[in-house]
Length: 154
Ligand SMILES: [Cu+2]
Image (tube, protein in one colour):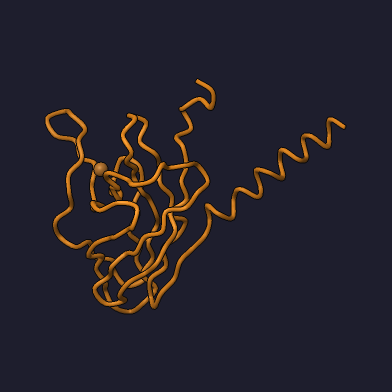
């Protein structure tokens, strides 16, 4: 009986994985495993991350992102200035070399979803569209994750 419980636990965690490892491809661009982390400050905003691969022979540039859940979603980078960590809007389009990668990860580039209209619930998806200069619009779903360090039952 105990073994069954352990198995069920393991299986439930295995089944959580496909959502996280989902990839979205259009043309030469593949957006790998997009996910968002809810803000733990109580505001209804989130940071999104993904690994973007350009499998083509030409450079492409990421121009912007849009999502129905937020009327203000921008590309941010986290930087260190005068010993303080802060984030700022990325103004220039980000280039991705032929057969190159652009990584959005915590503490680095991220998609910033401000003023989210709906409650962000773990495990649910945020549909969004990434706009590329050459490959056009790539539709993706960001999986909502909660930070590991936040206890489930505070
Ligand atoms: Cu930000």
